[in-house]
Image (cartoon, rainbow, N blue to C red):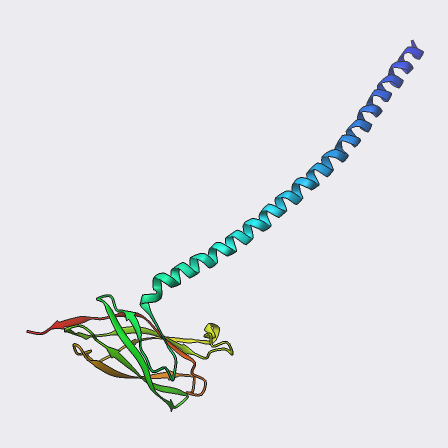
Length: 190
């Protein structure tokens, strides 16, 4: 009976050892399969990150195109004007007379009102600063300020509005951006 018990224990041990060996060989396969799956998932995550970055750029460009009418980009020395949407329609704006003033620059923004109504209470957000060697604005160093202009933009005329741009002397002033333009009132002729 003892020998039969020993034979049973020996056979059970052999079966268990064989099962463990098979499991080890199988787990090696599972490990390599798991590693392959992890590499595949990592590649997919990397591709998704690239896609998201690309989509963010596309969205930014689309937003810029949508906002293009709402922003006038002006540079010192330009002879022309830009068009900016003021809610009731488009106004023209031109940058002129850039001179030193205290710790910055004094400029004149000339707003053109092409309508037969006068406009008062004009408000705008101005961004200004330097440009890099490529002529592009250095947005990280720009200054932004909201302005309310007391001048009435008379119908069918240019109106000169002096503005103080702090922190950037004329020699370093590379751009002025006019955006978020709105008005308090419009006056029609009687």
